[in-house]
Length: 489
Image (tube, rainbow, N blue to C red; front, side, top):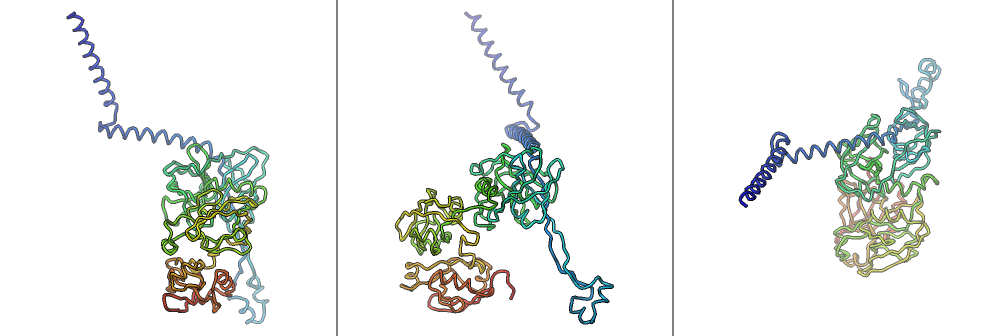
Protein backbone atom coordinates (compact mmCIF):
# COMPACT_ATOMS: atom_id res chain seq x y z
CA UNK A 1 0.00 0.00 0.00
CA UNK A 2 2.82 2.33 0.93
CA UNK A 3 4.70 1.41 -2.26
CA UNK A 4 1.67 2.28 -4.40
CA UNK A 5 1.27 5.71 -2.77
CA UNK A 6 4.96 6.51 -3.31
CA UNK A 7 4.64 5.61 -7.03
CA UNK A 8 1.61 7.96 -7.35
CA UNK A 9 3.53 10.86 -5.83
CA UNK A 10 6.39 10.21 -8.25
CA UNK A 11 4.02 10.36 -11.24
CA UNK A 12 2.60 13.67 -10.06
CA UNK A 13 6.09 15.12 -9.70
CA UNK A 14 7.02 13.95 -13.21
CA UNK A 15 3.85 15.52 -14.67
CA UNK A 16 4.54 18.87 -12.99
CA UNK A 17 8.18 18.80 -14.12
CA UNK A 18 7.12 18.07 -17.70
CA UNK A 19 4.63 20.95 -17.72
CA UNK A 20 7.27 23.34 -16.38
CA UNK A 21 9.76 22.23 -19.06
CA UNK A 22 7.12 22.76 -21.80
CA UNK A 23 6.36 26.34 -20.78
CA UNK A 24 10.08 27.11 -20.41
CA UNK A 25 10.56 25.86 -23.96
CA UNK A 26 7.74 28.08 -25.25
CA UNK A 27 9.15 31.15 -23.49
CA UNK A 28 12.67 30.32 -24.76
CA UNK A 29 11.35 30.30 -28.36
CA UNK A 30 9.93 33.84 -28.06
CA UNK A 31 11.99 36.87 -29.21
CA UNK A 32 14.14 38.87 -26.79
CA UNK A 33 11.89 40.71 -24.36
CA UNK A 34 10.07 37.61 -23.16
CA UNK A 35 6.56 38.27 -21.95
CA UNK A 36 3.02 38.71 -23.18
CA UNK A 37 3.91 41.84 -25.20
CA UNK A 38 6.67 40.02 -27.03
CA UNK A 39 4.31 37.14 -27.74
CA UNK A 40 1.74 39.49 -29.22
CA UNK A 41 4.42 41.16 -31.33
CA UNK A 42 5.54 37.81 -32.70
CA UNK A 43 1.96 36.87 -33.51
CA UNK A 44 1.42 40.20 -35.27
CA UNK A 45 4.55 39.70 -37.37
CA UNK A 46 3.38 36.22 -38.31
CA UNK A 47 -0.04 37.59 -39.33
CA UNK A 48 1.61 40.29 -41.43
CA UNK A 49 3.79 37.69 -43.16
CA UNK A 50 0.71 35.64 -43.99
CA UNK A 51 -1.13 38.75 -45.24
CA UNK A 52 1.80 39.82 -47.42
CA UNK A 53 1.77 36.44 -49.11
CA UNK A 54 -1.94 36.89 -49.93
CA UNK A 55 -1.16 40.33 -51.41
CA UNK A 56 1.55 38.80 -53.55
CA UNK A 57 -0.71 35.98 -54.74
CA UNK A 58 -3.48 38.44 -55.54
CA UNK A 59 -1.18 40.75 -57.47
CA UNK A 60 0.32 37.88 -59.44
CA UNK A 61 -3.07 36.44 -60.39
CA UNK A 62 -5.03 39.62 -61.20
CA UNK A 63 -2.44 42.10 -62.54
CA UNK A 64 -2.84 40.67 -66.09
CA UNK A 65 -6.46 41.88 -66.08
CA UNK A 66 -5.36 45.51 -65.56
CA UNK A 67 -4.53 47.65 -68.60
CA UNK A 68 -2.80 50.95 -69.31
CA UNK A 69 -4.95 53.42 -71.25
CA UNK A 70 -3.48 56.29 -73.26
CA UNK A 71 -5.99 58.77 -74.70
CA UNK A 72 -5.06 61.43 -77.26
CA UNK A 73 -7.05 64.59 -77.95
CA UNK A 74 -6.30 66.90 -80.87
CA UNK A 75 -6.55 70.57 -79.88
CA UNK A 76 -6.39 73.54 -82.23
CA UNK A 77 -4.65 76.72 -81.20
CA UNK A 78 -4.00 79.89 -83.15
CA UNK A 79 -0.33 80.35 -83.89
CA UNK A 80 1.13 83.83 -83.48
CA UNK A 81 4.12 85.45 -85.17
CA UNK A 82 7.01 87.31 -83.57
CA UNK A 83 5.68 90.72 -84.67
CA UNK A 84 2.10 90.23 -83.57
CA UNK A 85 -1.15 89.23 -85.24
CA UNK A 86 -3.08 90.08 -88.36
CA UNK A 87 -3.34 93.79 -87.50
CA UNK A 88 0.46 94.07 -87.68
CA UNK A 89 0.46 92.35 -91.07
CA UNK A 90 -2.12 94.83 -92.35
CA UNK A 91 -0.08 97.73 -90.93
CA UNK A 92 2.88 96.82 -93.14
CA UNK A 93 0.50 96.78 -96.13
CA UNK A 94 1.78 93.56 -97.64
CA UNK A 95 1.68 89.93 -96.60
CA UNK A 96 4.38 88.84 -99.03
CA UNK A 97 7.27 89.89 -96.80
CA UNK A 98 5.97 87.85 -93.87
CA UNK A 99 4.97 84.89 -95.99
CA UNK A 100 8.50 84.79 -97.35
CA UNK A 101 10.35 85.09 -94.04
CA UNK A 102 7.89 83.93 -91.36
CA UNK A 103 5.68 81.38 -93.11
CA UNK A 104 2.66 83.57 -93.75
CA UNK A 105 -0.34 84.82 -91.81
CA UNK A 106 -1.26 83.41 -88.42
CA UNK A 107 -3.10 80.12 -88.67
CA UNK A 108 -4.44 77.34 -86.46
CA UNK A 109 -1.96 74.72 -85.37
CA UNK A 110 -2.90 71.31 -84.07
CA UNK A 111 -1.58 70.10 -80.73
CA UNK A 112 -1.93 66.61 -79.32
CA UNK A 113 -2.85 66.34 -75.65
CA UNK A 114 -2.24 62.95 -74.07
CA UNK A 115 -3.65 61.59 -70.84
CA UNK A 116 -2.92 58.34 -69.04
CA UNK A 117 -5.27 56.18 -67.05
CA UNK A 118 -6.07 52.61 -66.12
CA UNK A 119 -8.79 50.10 -66.81
CA UNK A 120 -9.56 46.43 -66.30
CA UNK A 121 -10.78 43.66 -68.57
CA UNK A 122 -14.28 42.39 -67.73
CA UNK A 123 -14.72 39.77 -70.47
CA UNK A 124 -12.51 37.47 -72.52
CA UNK A 125 -13.57 39.17 -75.76
CA UNK A 126 -12.03 42.54 -74.83
CA UNK A 127 -14.54 44.71 -72.97
CA UNK A 128 -12.75 47.05 -70.56
CA UNK A 129 -14.20 49.22 -67.79
CA UNK A 130 -12.61 52.57 -66.96
CA UNK A 131 -13.47 56.14 -65.97
CA UNK A 132 -15.31 58.39 -68.38
CA UNK A 133 -12.88 61.24 -67.75
CA UNK A 134 -10.00 59.04 -68.92
CA UNK A 135 -11.41 58.65 -72.45
CA UNK A 136 -13.82 61.58 -72.75
CA UNK A 137 -13.52 63.48 -76.07
CA UNK A 138 -10.50 61.36 -77.05
CA UNK A 139 -9.70 61.15 -80.75
CA UNK A 140 -7.57 58.05 -80.26
CA UNK A 141 -7.39 55.49 -77.46
CA UNK A 142 -4.52 53.01 -77.00
CA UNK A 143 -4.71 50.08 -74.60
CA UNK A 144 -1.56 48.29 -73.44
CA UNK A 145 -1.86 44.87 -71.81
CA UNK A 146 0.41 43.51 -69.10
CA UNK A 147 2.31 41.48 -71.73
CA UNK A 148 3.19 44.67 -73.61
CA UNK A 149 0.78 44.19 -76.53
CA UNK A 150 -1.02 47.32 -77.67
CA UNK A 151 -4.46 47.72 -79.26
CA UNK A 152 -6.63 50.54 -80.54
CA UNK A 153 -9.83 50.86 -78.52
CA UNK A 154 -13.26 52.31 -79.20
CA UNK A 155 -15.71 53.75 -76.70
CA UNK A 156 -18.71 51.43 -76.49
CA UNK A 157 -20.68 53.44 -73.91
CA UNK A 158 -20.15 56.16 -71.33
CA UNK A 159 -21.93 57.81 -68.43
CA UNK A 160 -20.68 61.15 -67.15
CA UNK A 161 -22.95 61.07 -64.09
CA UNK A 162 -21.08 58.09 -62.59
CA UNK A 163 -17.81 58.82 -64.45
CA UNK A 164 -17.78 55.33 -65.97
CA UNK A 165 -17.04 54.22 -69.52
CA UNK A 166 -16.96 50.89 -71.36
CA UNK A 167 -14.38 50.52 -74.11
CA UNK A 168 -13.61 47.59 -76.43
CA UNK A 169 -10.52 46.16 -78.08
CA UNK A 170 -10.58 43.54 -80.84
CA UNK A 171 -8.32 40.53 -80.49
CA UNK A 172 -8.49 36.86 -81.45
CA UNK A 173 -6.92 35.67 -78.20
CA UNK A 174 -8.93 35.01 -75.04
CA UNK A 175 -8.10 37.62 -72.45
CA UNK A 176 -7.97 37.20 -68.67
CA UNK A 177 -10.79 39.04 -66.94
CA UNK A 178 -11.81 40.03 -63.43
CA UNK A 179 -14.47 38.74 -61.06
CA UNK A 180 -17.00 41.20 -59.68
CA UNK A 181 -17.59 41.34 -55.93
CA UNK A 182 -20.39 42.89 -53.89
CA UNK A 183 -19.50 46.42 -52.77
CA UNK A 184 -22.55 46.57 -50.49
CA UNK A 185 -20.92 43.91 -48.31
CA UNK A 186 -17.67 45.86 -47.90
CA UNK A 187 -16.88 46.66 -44.29
CA UNK A 188 -15.02 49.70 -43.01
CA UNK A 189 -11.54 48.53 -42.03
CA UNK A 190 -11.45 45.74 -44.61
CA UNK A 191 -8.23 45.28 -46.61
CA UNK A 192 -8.32 46.36 -50.28
CA UNK A 193 -5.73 46.40 -53.07
CA UNK A 194 -5.46 48.95 -55.90
CA UNK A 195 -3.70 48.07 -59.15
CA UNK A 196 -3.10 50.71 -61.81
CA UNK A 197 -0.68 52.94 -63.66
CA UNK A 198 0.02 55.99 -61.47
CA UNK A 199 2.12 58.54 -63.36
CA UNK A 200 2.48 55.93 -66.13
CA UNK A 201 4.20 53.40 -63.88
CA UNK A 202 2.65 50.18 -65.19
CA UNK A 203 0.91 47.76 -62.84
CA UNK A 204 1.70 49.44 -59.55
CA UNK A 205 0.17 47.57 -56.60
CA UNK A 206 -0.83 49.37 -53.39
CA UNK A 207 -2.76 48.13 -50.36
CA UNK A 208 -4.82 49.77 -47.66
CA UNK A 209 -8.16 49.57 -45.94
CA UNK A 210 -11.67 50.81 -46.60
CA UNK A 211 -11.65 54.10 -44.68
CA UNK A 212 -15.32 54.95 -45.18
CA UNK A 213 -18.33 54.26 -47.39
CA UNK A 214 -21.04 56.41 -48.92
CA UNK A 215 -18.83 59.47 -49.35
CA UNK A 216 -20.38 62.45 -51.18
CA UNK A 217 -17.61 64.60 -52.68
CA UNK A 218 -19.64 66.79 -55.06
CA UNK A 219 -18.59 65.12 -58.29
CA UNK A 220 -22.11 64.27 -59.47
CA UNK A 221 -25.71 63.49 -58.50
CA UNK A 222 -24.96 59.85 -57.65
CA UNK A 223 -21.97 60.27 -55.36
CA UNK A 224 -21.60 57.20 -53.16
CA UNK A 225 -17.85 56.67 -53.05
CA UNK A 226 -15.73 54.13 -51.22
CA UNK A 227 -12.94 55.96 -49.41
CA UNK A 228 -9.64 54.13 -49.07
CA UNK A 229 -6.13 54.85 -47.85
CA UNK A 230 -4.61 52.55 -50.48
CA UNK A 231 -2.33 54.89 -52.46
CA UNK A 232 -4.16 56.29 -55.48
CA UNK A 233 -2.49 58.84 -57.75
CA UNK A 234 -3.02 60.41 -61.20
CA UNK A 235 -3.01 57.51 -63.66
CA UNK A 236 -4.81 55.17 -61.26
CA UNK A 237 -8.14 56.49 -62.55
CA UNK A 238 -10.26 53.67 -63.97
CA UNK A 239 -8.23 50.93 -62.32
CA UNK A 240 -9.72 48.23 -60.08
CA UNK A 241 -9.97 48.09 -56.31
CA UNK A 242 -9.83 44.44 -55.18
CA UNK A 243 -10.84 42.78 -51.93
CA UNK A 244 -8.61 40.01 -50.57
CA UNK A 245 -10.73 37.41 -52.36
CA UNK A 246 -9.52 38.87 -55.66
CA UNK A 247 -12.91 40.39 -56.50
CA UNK A 248 -13.31 43.90 -57.89
CA UNK A 249 -15.28 45.97 -55.40
CA UNK A 250 -14.59 49.46 -56.79
CA UNK A 251 -13.27 51.55 -59.68
CA UNK A 252 -10.59 54.02 -58.55
CA UNK A 253 -11.76 57.46 -59.59
CA UNK A 254 -10.77 60.49 -57.53
CA UNK A 255 -8.20 61.90 -55.15
CA UNK A 256 -8.02 65.00 -52.98
CA UNK A 257 -5.30 67.36 -54.12
CA UNK A 258 -2.40 67.39 -51.64
CA UNK A 259 -4.21 64.77 -49.55
CA UNK A 260 -2.38 61.68 -48.35
CA UNK A 261 -4.14 58.39 -47.87
CA UNK A 262 -7.45 59.74 -49.18
CA UNK A 263 -8.70 58.16 -52.41
CA UNK A 264 -12.15 57.40 -53.73
CA UNK A 265 -13.59 54.55 -55.78
CA UNK A 266 -16.97 54.08 -57.45
CA UNK A 267 -18.69 51.04 -55.86
CA UNK A 268 -18.69 48.16 -58.32
CA UNK A 269 -22.40 47.55 -57.72
CA UNK A 270 -23.08 50.94 -59.30
CA UNK A 271 -21.11 49.82 -62.35
CA UNK A 272 -22.96 46.50 -62.50
CA UNK A 273 -26.29 48.37 -62.50
CA UNK A 274 -25.43 50.27 -65.70
CA UNK A 275 -23.12 47.83 -67.49
CA UNK A 276 -25.82 46.27 -69.65
CA UNK A 277 -27.02 49.71 -70.80
CA UNK A 278 -23.47 50.77 -71.66
CA UNK A 279 -22.94 47.61 -73.68
CA UNK A 280 -26.26 47.53 -75.56
CA UNK A 281 -27.27 51.22 -75.80
CA UNK A 282 -24.07 53.17 -75.28
CA UNK A 283 -25.82 55.27 -72.64
CA UNK A 284 -27.69 54.76 -69.37
CA UNK A 285 -31.47 54.78 -68.99
CA UNK A 286 -32.50 56.10 -65.58
CA UNK A 287 -35.72 56.65 -63.72
CA UNK A 288 -37.26 60.09 -63.31
CA UNK A 289 -39.91 61.36 -60.87
CA UNK A 290 -39.90 65.01 -61.86
CA UNK A 291 -39.01 66.48 -58.48
CA UNK A 292 -36.21 68.58 -57.06
CA UNK A 293 -35.15 67.63 -53.57
CA UNK A 294 -32.83 68.83 -50.84
CA UNK A 295 -31.67 67.76 -47.43
CA UNK A 296 -33.56 68.82 -44.33
CA UNK A 297 -31.42 71.32 -42.42
CA UNK A 298 -31.91 72.03 -38.70
CA UNK A 299 -33.60 75.36 -39.58
CA UNK A 300 -36.02 73.66 -41.96
CA UNK A 301 -36.74 70.94 -39.42
CA UNK A 302 -37.54 73.60 -36.84
CA UNK A 303 -39.75 75.61 -39.20
CA UNK A 304 -41.66 72.52 -40.31
CA UNK A 305 -41.81 71.21 -36.74
CA UNK A 306 -40.14 67.92 -37.69
CA UNK A 307 -38.87 65.48 -35.08
CA UNK A 308 -35.83 64.48 -37.15
CA UNK A 309 -34.06 65.23 -40.45
CA UNK A 310 -34.76 61.89 -42.09
CA UNK A 311 -36.09 62.02 -45.65
CA UNK A 312 -35.78 64.20 -48.77
CA UNK A 313 -37.62 67.52 -48.92
CA UNK A 314 -39.38 68.19 -52.23
CA UNK A 315 -38.49 71.77 -53.13
CA UNK A 316 -39.96 71.83 -56.63
CA UNK A 317 -42.38 69.81 -58.77
CA UNK A 318 -41.84 69.83 -62.54
CA UNK A 319 -45.05 70.50 -64.41
CA UNK A 320 -46.56 67.52 -66.24
CA UNK A 321 -44.02 65.05 -64.84
CA UNK A 322 -44.80 61.80 -62.91
CA UNK A 323 -44.70 63.31 -59.41
CA UNK A 324 -47.19 66.06 -60.27
CA UNK A 325 -49.49 63.58 -62.01
CA UNK A 326 -49.44 61.40 -58.90
CA UNK A 327 -50.35 64.31 -56.60
CA UNK A 328 -47.06 65.12 -54.88
CA UNK A 329 -46.47 68.73 -53.88
CA UNK A 330 -43.60 71.03 -52.95
CA UNK A 331 -42.72 70.76 -49.23
CA UNK A 332 -43.66 67.05 -49.15
CA UNK A 333 -41.00 64.95 -47.44
CA UNK A 334 -40.27 61.63 -49.16
CA UNK A 335 -39.73 58.97 -46.48
CA UNK A 336 -39.83 55.80 -48.60
CA UNK A 337 -39.63 54.97 -52.28
CA UNK A 338 -40.35 51.54 -53.72
CA UNK A 339 -40.09 50.03 -50.25
CA UNK A 340 -36.69 51.60 -49.48
CA UNK A 341 -36.28 54.03 -46.59
CA UNK A 342 -34.88 57.40 -47.69
CA UNK A 343 -32.39 59.10 -45.38
CA UNK A 344 -31.48 62.15 -47.48
CA UNK A 345 -31.66 63.68 -50.95
CA UNK A 346 -28.53 61.90 -52.23
CA UNK A 347 -30.00 58.52 -51.38
CA UNK A 348 -33.27 59.42 -53.11
CA UNK A 349 -31.44 60.30 -56.33
CA UNK A 350 -29.59 56.98 -56.32
CA UNK A 351 -32.78 54.99 -55.67
CA UNK A 352 -34.71 56.84 -58.40
CA UNK A 353 -31.89 56.25 -60.88
CA UNK A 354 -32.22 52.48 -60.47
CA UNK A 355 -36.00 52.39 -60.99
CA UNK A 356 -37.35 50.71 -64.12
CA UNK A 357 -38.94 53.18 -66.52
CA UNK A 358 -42.70 52.62 -66.74
CA UNK A 359 -42.93 50.82 -63.40
CA UNK A 360 -45.46 52.05 -60.81
CA UNK A 361 -43.81 52.47 -57.41
CA UNK A 362 -45.06 53.26 -53.92
CA UNK A 363 -44.04 56.61 -52.42
CA UNK A 364 -44.52 57.34 -48.72
CA UNK A 365 -44.44 61.02 -47.84
CA UNK A 366 -44.94 63.28 -44.85
CA UNK A 367 -47.26 66.24 -45.51
CA UNK A 368 -48.26 68.69 -42.78
CA UNK A 369 -47.54 66.11 -40.10
CA UNK A 370 -49.52 63.31 -41.77
CA UNK A 371 -48.05 60.25 -43.48
CA UNK A 372 -49.53 59.67 -46.95
CA UNK A 373 -48.99 57.07 -49.70
CA UNK A 374 -48.97 57.60 -53.47
CA UNK A 375 -48.39 55.56 -56.60
CA UNK A 376 -46.00 57.12 -59.10
CA UNK A 377 -45.34 55.81 -62.59
CA UNK A 378 -41.61 56.16 -63.23
CA UNK A 379 -40.60 58.26 -66.22
CA UNK A 380 -37.30 58.32 -68.10
CA UNK A 381 -34.72 60.89 -67.18
CA UNK A 382 -33.62 62.79 -70.26
CA UNK A 383 -30.11 64.20 -70.40
CA UNK A 384 -31.42 67.73 -70.84
CA UNK A 385 -33.54 67.50 -67.69
CA UNK A 386 -32.06 68.66 -64.39
CA UNK A 387 -32.29 66.29 -61.46
CA UNK A 388 -32.24 69.35 -59.27
CA UNK A 389 -33.32 72.84 -60.29
CA UNK A 390 -30.83 74.00 -57.68
CA UNK A 391 -28.10 73.99 -60.33
CA UNK A 392 -29.23 77.46 -61.34
CA UNK A 393 -29.04 78.98 -57.88
CA UNK A 394 -26.03 76.88 -56.79
CA UNK A 395 -23.98 78.79 -59.40
CA UNK A 396 -24.31 81.66 -56.94
CA UNK A 397 -23.70 79.50 -53.86
CA UNK A 398 -27.20 79.36 -52.44
CA UNK A 399 -30.04 76.86 -52.12
CA UNK A 400 -33.66 77.97 -52.32
CA UNK A 401 -37.10 76.45 -52.08
CA UNK A 402 -40.70 77.47 -52.50
CA UNK A 403 -42.09 79.03 -49.34
CA UNK A 404 -44.75 76.91 -47.66
CA UNK A 405 -47.88 78.37 -45.96
CA UNK A 406 -46.37 77.48 -42.57
CA UNK A 407 -43.18 79.35 -43.44
CA UNK A 408 -45.13 82.35 -44.68
CA UNK A 409 -47.05 82.50 -41.40
CA UNK A 410 -43.84 82.09 -39.41
CA UNK A 411 -42.28 85.09 -41.19
CA UNK A 412 -45.40 87.22 -40.87
CA UNK A 413 -46.31 86.82 -44.55
CA UNK A 414 -49.50 84.83 -44.12
CA UNK A 415 -51.27 84.30 -47.43
CA UNK A 416 -48.26 85.36 -49.49
CA UNK A 417 -46.13 83.16 -51.75
CA UNK A 418 -42.51 83.32 -52.71
CA UNK A 419 -39.09 81.72 -52.66
CA UNK A 420 -36.92 81.47 -49.57
CA UNK A 421 -33.17 80.91 -49.24
CA UNK A 422 -32.47 77.84 -47.11
CA UNK A 423 -28.69 77.58 -47.29
CA UNK A 424 -25.68 79.75 -48.19
CA UNK A 425 -22.32 78.33 -49.23
CA UNK A 426 -19.45 79.89 -47.31
CA UNK A 427 -17.24 82.08 -49.50
CA UNK A 428 -19.74 82.07 -52.40
CA UNK A 429 -21.05 85.14 -54.29
CA UNK A 430 -24.26 84.92 -52.23
CA UNK A 431 -22.21 84.88 -49.02
CA UNK A 432 -20.05 87.80 -50.22
CA UNK A 433 -23.23 89.77 -51.00
CA UNK A 434 -24.39 89.32 -47.43
CA UNK A 435 -27.33 87.01 -48.14
CA UNK A 436 -28.48 84.72 -45.34
CA UNK A 437 -30.64 81.65 -44.85
CA UNK A 438 -34.32 82.65 -44.41
CA UNK A 439 -33.96 85.66 -46.72
CA UNK A 440 -36.99 85.84 -49.04
CA UNK A 441 -36.55 86.56 -52.77
CA UNK A 442 -39.24 88.96 -54.01
CA UNK A 443 -37.82 89.81 -57.46
CA UNK A 444 -35.26 88.52 -59.95
CA UNK A 445 -34.10 91.16 -62.45
CA UNK A 446 -37.15 93.29 -61.59
CA UNK A 447 -39.55 90.39 -62.25
CA UNK A 448 -41.89 89.50 -59.38
CA UNK A 449 -41.31 86.03 -57.90
CA UNK A 450 -44.24 84.30 -56.24
CA UNK A 451 -43.44 80.65 -57.01
CA UNK A 452 -40.58 78.35 -57.88
CA UNK A 453 -41.63 78.39 -61.54
CA UNK A 454 -41.40 82.21 -61.53
CA UNK A 455 -37.94 82.00 -59.99
CA UNK A 456 -36.73 79.40 -62.52
CA UNK A 457 -38.05 81.34 -65.51
CA UNK A 458 -36.51 84.59 -64.32
CA UNK A 459 -33.13 83.00 -63.56
CA UNK A 460 -33.08 81.16 -66.89
CA UNK A 461 -34.01 84.34 -68.76
CA UNK A 462 -31.00 86.20 -67.33
CA UNK A 463 -28.83 86.98 -70.36
CA UNK A 464 -25.56 87.28 -68.47
CA UNK A 465 -23.89 85.97 -65.37
CA UNK A 466 -25.24 88.74 -63.16
CA UNK A 467 -28.69 88.98 -61.57
CA UNK A 468 -30.41 91.63 -59.49
CA UNK A 469 -32.42 90.29 -56.54
CA UNK A 470 -34.91 92.10 -54.34
CA UNK A 471 -34.62 90.57 -50.88
CA UNK A 472 -36.92 90.81 -47.86
CA UNK A 473 -35.34 90.30 -44.45
CA UNK A 474 -37.35 90.86 -41.32
CA UNK A 475 -39.11 94.20 -41.87
CA UNK A 476 -36.79 95.60 -44.53
CA UNK A 477 -36.25 95.03 -48.26
CA UNK A 478 -33.09 95.67 -50.28
CA UNK A 479 -31.49 94.92 -53.66
CA UNK A 480 -28.49 92.62 -54.11
CA UNK A 481 -26.39 92.06 -57.23
CA UNK A 482 -24.92 88.60 -57.72
CA UNK A 483 -22.40 87.22 -60.19
CA UNK A 484 -22.02 83.49 -60.92
CA UNK A 485 -19.05 81.72 -59.41
CA UNK A 486 -16.06 81.86 -61.70
CA UNK A 487 -17.05 85.07 -63.57
CA UNK A 488 -14.90 88.18 -63.55
CA UNK A 489 -15.90 91.66 -62.36
